[in-house]
Image 1 (cartoon, rainbow, N blue to C red):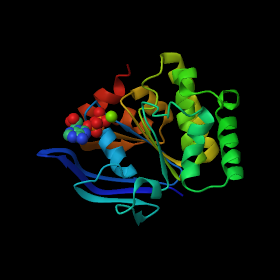
Image 2: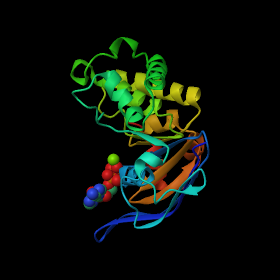
Image 3: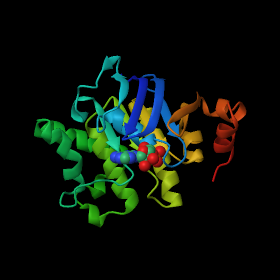
Length: 238
Ligand code: ADP
Ligand code: MG
């Protein structure tokens, strides 16, 4: 469930080509991290996978089926952003329920799914609070909970920890790793942080100026970097 294939993906904004012939296979259940400097095209690639942006060329396949004609809601994915993008007027429970409600799920199923996600993320005591009554870390847990309740086969994370302070970053990172083990779903995770990439990934994809520099297991990249860029990027944690 949730395998992902990128075939010859290119993307231009006007005359500027920001993604150049990206090819990648992500296996079902794999935790893949896209890493690279700011502006190298990580978010654009994630948005293309999600269907929030059209590629200029190439094809996205989820579970071996082309999804380019499908809107985001029909791709079986859930996305967690750097900014939590919660609705301020809804409680944590309301935010987590909304997607299921919109897709027509019945009340029992919604309650059950929210409970399951709340258990997983230790959110039980926070379900009736609004975003303004939650800390940054708690908000991000709600945003992750909102992703879980829809039971996506594929999770997309765009720098989910970058607005959190150092201690929370570590905690939330551990939560995400735990979640991956529990759900066994495919995860595609974007970061510019080497430590996150090295600790979370089954497979790291190093991007630079819209191209893939190297794909491999964290240790493989560390021990046998394909070039100076990868060596510099992987070898120098912040
Ligand atoms: P990253 O997430 O790796 O920091 P992005 O994917 O956000 O990089 O951006 C890649 C490049 O594409 C950058 O040069 C950025 O300025 C440009 N870009 C992103 N979105 C747009 C857009 N909507 N219009 C024009 N240029 C864009
Ligand atoms: Mg980005």
